[in-house]
Each structure stands twice: as C-alpha cells, then as structure tokens.
Image (cartoon, rainbow, N blue to C red; front, side):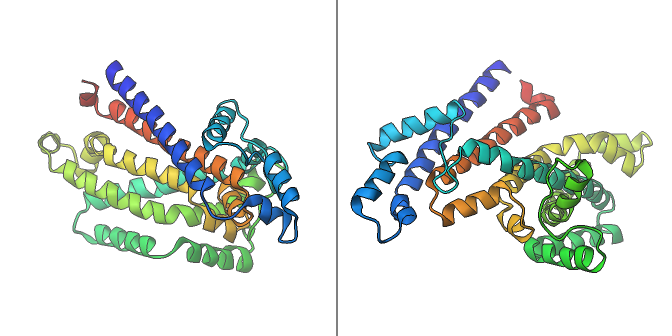
Length: 313
C-alpha cells in the first residue's frame, strides 16, 4: 500500500510538471503579441516594447517559465493584462460559480443515474430496461446547449419558476444562488446522467453474472436485494472512473452553458482571456484546471483501493 501511494504521488508530480511545460510553451508560441493587441495598430514600437517589459513578456523563455511556476506555487498567478487585477482574485471570484455549479450538476447526475442504472440492470431486457436505455440514448444525442435553451423557454419565460440567466451571488443567501444555478446544473447533468446510467447498467450486468450473486440469490435474496447488497459495490470501479472524468469535464468544460446563462465562471473567463489575448489569464487558469483534473484522477485511484480490497495487495 505505501509503495502504491508513493508511485501514484510520483506520477501526479510528473504529470503536473509535464502539463505546466506544455501549457507554457503552447501559450507563448501562439501567434500575435498581447502588447501590440492592447496598444493598437497605431502604437509606436517604443511604447509596445515598454508595455511588453511591464507585462513580463521579455527575457528568455526558461526564466519566464520558472518565474511563472514559482509564482503559482506561492499563490501569485500574475496580473491580468485586460482587467489589471491579480489573476488569483479573478480565479477565486469565478470559482465561486463554477465549483458549486459542478457539484450541483454532479449531485443531480448521480441521483438520476444510480437508480436508473440499477433498475435497468435488474430488469434487463424488460420494459423498464428498454425505457431507461431509450431515455439515455436521447440524453446523449441532444446537445446540452439546445436543452439549456429549451429549459429557459419553459421554466423561465413560460412558467417563471427560475431565472433565465445571470448569477445573483451568494451574498443574498443560499436559496437565491441555488435558483440561479438550477437550470445550468440540469442542462449539464442530464447528458452526464445518461452516460453514467449506461456505464452503471453495463457494470452491474457483468457483476450479476458472477457466482457470488447466484449464491446470494440461492440463499433467498431477491434480484433487487442482490444488486443493492452485493452487486453495487463490486460494480463501482468503472463508475468511479466516469465520475472522475465527469467532474473534470464539468469544471473545465462548461464554457457553452456559462455563456448561454451569462454565468461568470471559469469557462467564461478562459473564453474572454482567449478573445482578449490575455495570455497570463489563459495559461494560469488552464494550468489550474489541468491540475484539478490530475488531482481528481489521483483521488479516483485512491478510491479504487477503498472500494476493492484486492488492490491493497
């Protein structure tokens, strides 16, 4: 077990180092100079060079990389070219939207997927299984931005139950914030729930064919009891893998949904940074999101050990 943890930690550190190098190099070699973009076409070369120096765009690339990484390790992500404020403050502000939205969408996805997957596996080949598989096929096929606009039309414009967009902040209380995130969370959760349901069903069907399930049934347990008591835990490893991937995707990949609902999240911050050539924002936020993905995958691998005792050896 300690050797396993050390190997996983070594892999985590190596992945972070490689990711930081790749992100820095890719962002720095993108055509176009941020200083020229900010100053305009009529700026003099001396003015542009002075701005490049103030933005830290001069000097050898290795030194600039070490300065950037050292700043990230100490919490200094640099200063935004566009907003002229520390990037760390921007990230913390936007994370107050993206992180609750991700957790909200993950909770909704799991609440839908686990019972649906268990029902489809327990009723394999019957009407309930066909209905669940049909619904999941529809959930995978429909784009989430189209579904988001449909939710706005029905629940915001017609029924007036929920706001159509924007985020009121958490200063007014928990309920107004949750109301503002409900429609985006549902739009993000349904496609992910469809994928998770299919994975849960496949993993449970494979588990239900094992000898220990037949033994449990022979002792008098019903199909549902065998699934809940013995099948679910043994089918969790592929489900945990999908959950880890979905958390990473929802945290970093909600750009379209955040733009549909005008949410000031991390995805929209990256989009604005790319359009405004704010390279320090782009590379810092992308590095943080990649680090989050790597850490979540590390946590999922540790969860494997907790779920399956055989891996501890």
